[in-house]
Length: 173
Image (cartoon, rainbow, N blue to C red; front, side, top):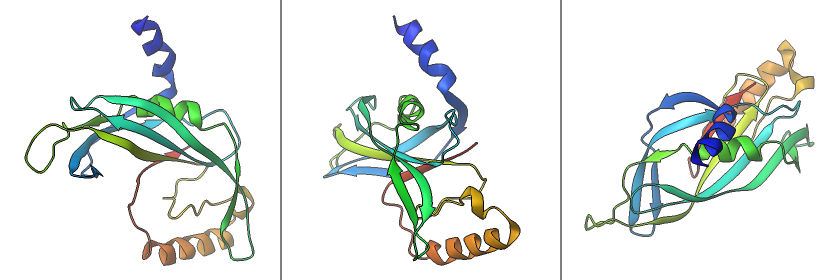
């Protein structure tokens, strides 16, 4: 049965190994993210993101993996912010990728093993190879040269207020 599950989820993940220094905290318990796999882009014309929640057990295994949110970018409002709508497209590949997350063993301040609950990771799915900052996706109708300059300027302005409250993985189609 385990082999079957592996082969079902294996094709959904693009295997790129990254080493990160992002710390996950929960009360007095903390751990370090050591491996992330970028999910494959789902078969959709939309771009957007998903949020995946999970627990990190005392042995550093990942449990209770669940995609809690999946949103598609649809347009911009008058303030230049992206409008989103709920969509299902990003949940399966995000959950599949989250199953391959690797962490150091969680420890509390006294060095004892502990468990981190309700950890989160965000998977961005973009049609264009630009870093997504504060959900500022480049929309298809904005992909000409003039709009790309405006987009990059907005990203530069938003970067100053960007905070890593949640670990983000960017995936490009």
